[in-house]
Image 1 (cartoon, chains in turn brown, red):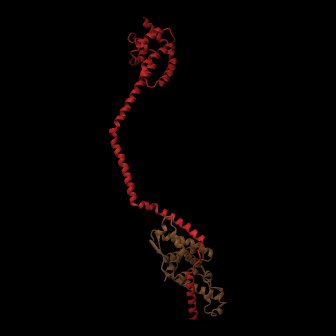
Image 2 (image 1 turned 120 degrees about the horizontal axis):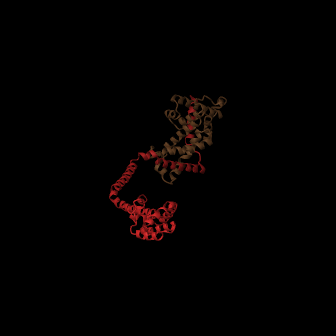
Image 3 (image 1 turned 30 degrees about the vertical axis):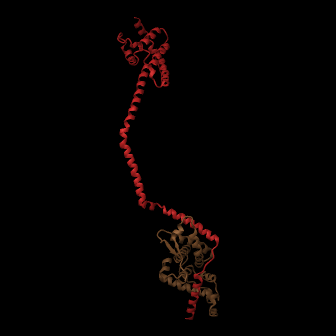
Amino acid sequence: MSIIKHYHKQDFLAHKDHSALSRLIDEQYAKCLGIAYRYCKSDEQANELSSQCFITTLKNLLAEEEPEEFDENTFVRQFIICIVKTILTQRKGELIADTTIVASSKRNEANLFSDSDYYKTLSPQDFIQHLRKLNTVQQIIYNLYCIDQFTIKDIANIIQHHELSIKALIERARFNLISSIKSIV
Amino acid sequence: MAELDENKKIEEHIRSVLKDFTVSVTEDQKNFLFQKYDQIKTHHKNIQFHLPEIIKNKTLWIISGSFVLIILLIYIVTLFSSPSNDDPPTQSINTSVDTTNNQSISHPIDTTKHTPSHRDTIPSTSKTNTISITTPSQTNITSPTNNNKELNKTTNDQNTDNSKKLDTTTIPKKSNTSNDIVPKKKKKKRTQESNVEDQNLPVLEPKTPELNTKEEE
């Protein structure tokens, strides 16, 4: 069990002192960048949004109405919410209800049970590439529900959609992702 | 069922792989974050001095109110204390004004109406000339002591020109104006008055012979 790291607001607001920020960057930014890679469609977008949302999250947590102390889980959670909202605002014209299915799934259906541990050979970058094949909203919802373990209610609040539609989108994203992974094997 | 179990296994594997997925951070990215962080700090300081918060601050209102009250008190105190101290300066001003007034009144009269001064010495003798005497009669008030000298001089210079008569009139003026403060102005006035007198010479010429004849008589 790893000890949860805590950060104090006043350490960040100290005059001409970057030690708190350098500590936060060293401990959390690599993780935040990995999260951004999962949620974004490209590495460039991930690099851009991760720095932007990292600073925005820190700014929000340093606000007066926030408590004097925050932990790493709070920071990462706020970072994820920030990055999701940023992506959704950038892709406002895209339809949420996407019914597209990975086209190659049916072709490679015969090879699905050739090796029971075939997916274990895939690297994290390979999984990220499969995630990026999904629709933007499906990618976001799958990341939120299956990887970052947000509740359906929280996801509905973040995306501003009904919980039932969120459930349907989760099932569709699951099906599309696994079909995409199985198609390669 | 076997497919569903496999899907769950794949999903758990993806979660375990991607949950702690990290990307190495470069120095450029760190520097960029530091720059953005400095902007946040300055923004935070600006928020601290935001106007609505300043207005809401009660201590600031108390300090500013007390400052205004102190200024008002000082102003009121100076207002009520000033009348006792204002008397001496007003007097001094009045005196100075009086001196200037005396000078200004006395001299112009002397200069303008001195030419026919010897007429004033014989006002009662000739009742016919009362109209011409009434105007210069004020000169006697200012220079009564020099009237005899003037008379002597005028008698000696009866046959001289009018310009010489004007010169004689200027001499008693100097004696009378021994207490003058600003002589330059007098000179200017004299020049102006001399010009005026030159202009008025034709009017005076017929009157002087008459007076001289009376004195001779």
